[in-house]
Length: 354
Ligand SMILES: Nc1ncnc2c1ncn2[C@@H]1O[C@H](COP(=O)(O)OP(=O)(O)OP(=O)(O)O)[C@@H](O)[C@H]1O
Image 1 (cartoon, helix red, strand yellow):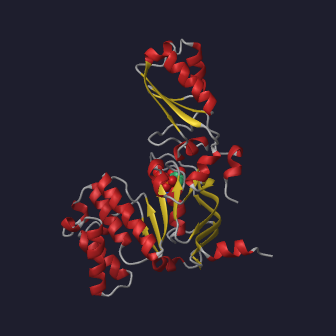
Image 2: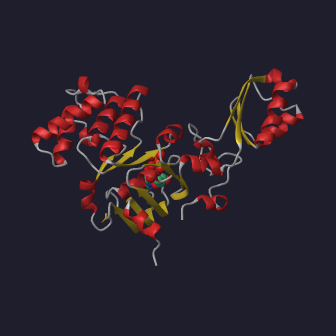
């Protein structure tokens, strides 16, 4: 028998995904193009996004975030599994997606020929608003995002950040209960970013909108998200609130050491620290217990190592630490998982949402 809690959580679910599998087929080698193997971009994904929350999908390049949202928005058919959006089965009825959700993808080519104003107005009309209402909605969203001075300019003649902002305006125009935004603030300056987050937050506060946000900007994600799912190689390797996920890293603190030129590894204690450090140029990042951190700070500030030290910083765990601990790659790098991070397998099972 179903417990009241489960029944209740189902009732307020905006997006519910179960057992989602998507494999891109292999590509045969042709005229100088090498063959590519099949890619399982969604590997039995299960997710539940509650109504009214800002839910993030976080993961490195190629983790499968866009593939997942394209299935959630009815644009890509899964091989297996179910997708329910506000109670509608979008695998069986992908055509219903346009009534339920606004989707901002990574590409904007469909709107490129239109002016900023016309793109917003046309989208509003397509979402069922009458001419006068569509124009009012257009004016409102352009004012909200500071786009009025650019209203008459075609998107293809704007800078990257301006074009992205215009695309956000079109995504937000006309009310949709679910906003699916794939990297909405890419290329934007801080002023534009703030305007976008304020506009998203307003739709949640005033319209009760649910927001599903794709990002690999860990820092930004931490401040705006209610909950986050971390994707890696097509799998959800963790899901929870940013605070909850951070608590899973325990009471570890992060110690960052910046060396003047190079780390003085001829000092045995420094060499020992280096074994567990993630090194990036002159910077070492360590995750340590509070006691270990105290000892490490005493070592690098008190002894001969101090002469080689340029700067250091102690911080409580961030979402980025969680991400690295789970086998994700730190922001801004394309390298392999952190040296002391588990490879996203057994060690993190306890974090994966049931
Ligand atoms: N149309 C396609 N055909 C074949 N493989 C694809 C296709 N689209 C994506 N892939 C592969 O599927 C995997 C997941 O890609 P996806 O675009 O979903 O990742 P992502 O997490 O959105 O990445 P990014 O952060 O770079 O946007 C990658 O290995 C990618 O190379």
